[in-house]
Length: 312
Ligand code: NAP
Image (cartoon, rainbow, N blue to C red; front, side, top):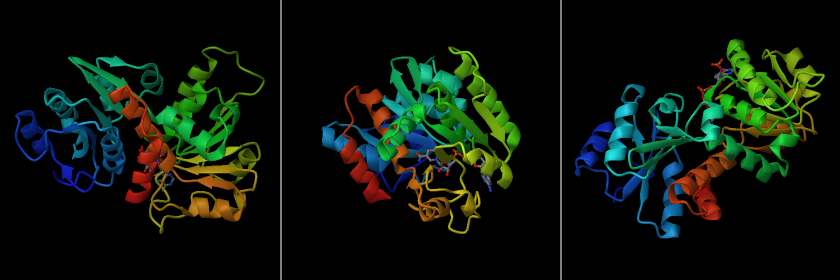
């Protein structure tokens, strides 16, 4: 058996597997498709869980470009995979490949988990619910009780977070994105979700602001939780996303980036006395929820957490 954490398989490998040959072992019946996918820690987390449960399944990572997504999903189904995870850049396109969607996937407009059931391809989104669990775990607060600012609300992860906040009926939602138009699009969708079962209050609960110091300062005074969903922070040389002077001790700051474990944003927030967390808890909880969908049994959370800690 190749090392499934360090090996990245190709579409050709999946084609061969669908014909019963090639380098992907027959035990592999779960995988993450993405591009790039090499950095993914999901095989370490899921294989530790599968081993501890005594399941005769394994999880691999497969590089797949957008133009080959439909073929890859079909190949995996024909190769009798149980399901798939989807990561950058497939979460939106995958919607069109599902024969059914669960409510969250439909409301968030993105799919990160597929379950194969005969000819049915059921799409789920565990990113949003995973964020709810992560925030509860690391800050001991429910997302629905927090006034939230999302930096990078127009990106894939940021839009899922923003729409999940709307589903949770967060009392305030401030959306920030370098390309402001994208945040306005997400704000419209968030408002539809928020207003579907409640009348608009005296203040519009969803606000879009530019990534400008004065706007950020004004809004942060009435925010409990800041979520960084931009890709800034992954490199130590990345510039600051927001000035350190804007961060205050009463804030909670959640950075979806988890490598490095302490980004510049988290370092600034810690220096300001704020509570902080990186994004490893989101990776863990979205993964645990996906595993529960595939296996229909509780995920061994602590086993998965230890495997992630080691892999990272
Ligand atoms: P994405 O769809 O490409 O979105 C990237 C976001 O970052 C966009 O909002 C983009 O703004 C913004 N951005 C990029 N460079 C910027 C800059 N120089 N200044 C300001 N904003 C900038 O990527 P994604 O899939 O949402 O991922 C975003 C981050 O979340 C990544 O670091 C990823 O690793 C992390 N993530 C973590 C988890 C987890 O499990 N912890 C899960 C998913 C994602 P524009 O719209 O203006 O381009």
